[in-house]
Image (spheres, one colour):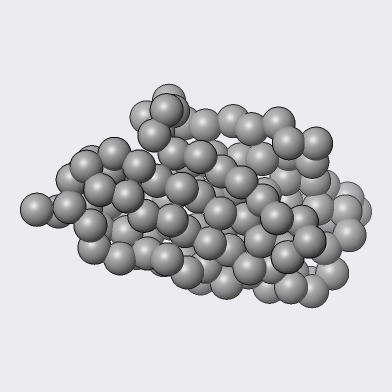
Length: 118
């Protein structure tokens, strides 16, 4: 099992910045990707950013150039630096760890609210 705990959400004005952090615990062997997803009211959960083992990253088009995903393997944490925030970034943000074998399992945090508003 993997337990994930997000922190760092809050209220910020448009143009501002926030940094989300996700602390992982439990059995992390076999995890091959870590990422962030978000879900806005009335919308489906969507990928924001993902980092694979080895450091390859992928971002949603809507956040490219504004968000940066990073990890600290020694501390078992993954972070999302969000700059130049816009109202459309308002959502609940979820940390995700993926283990492809043996059961192709996804692990999720409880979510942290990010609200961008003036």
